[in-house]
Length: 99
Image (cartoon, rainbow, N blue to C red; front, side, top):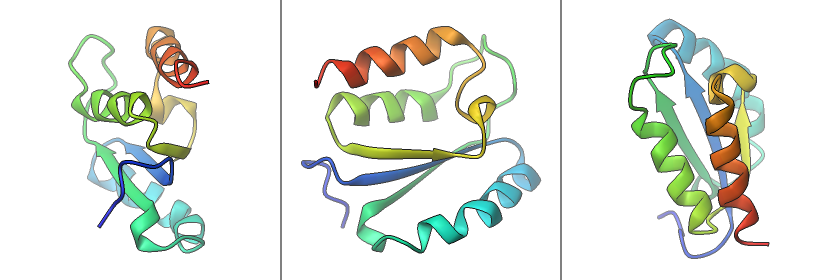
């Protein structure tokens, strides 16, 4: 069971089609192995590269950050997490609310 009440989650955020997500999963496996399964949360965003479409996976991540449940976010590169700097700003504002 994942404990959302404490800042313990290591979030592995992946974005892309099935093949891209499988590649990212193979890359981050050595990092996931460093933690107990209870500490790891995997969020796969099967969305397109469009910045105009809703991204429920990003919304989920922002909510977790606002709940102060995330310790670390792992992603293959910045473009997997965001391309739109508005999303970066939202993530940073959400994280800074807790400091």
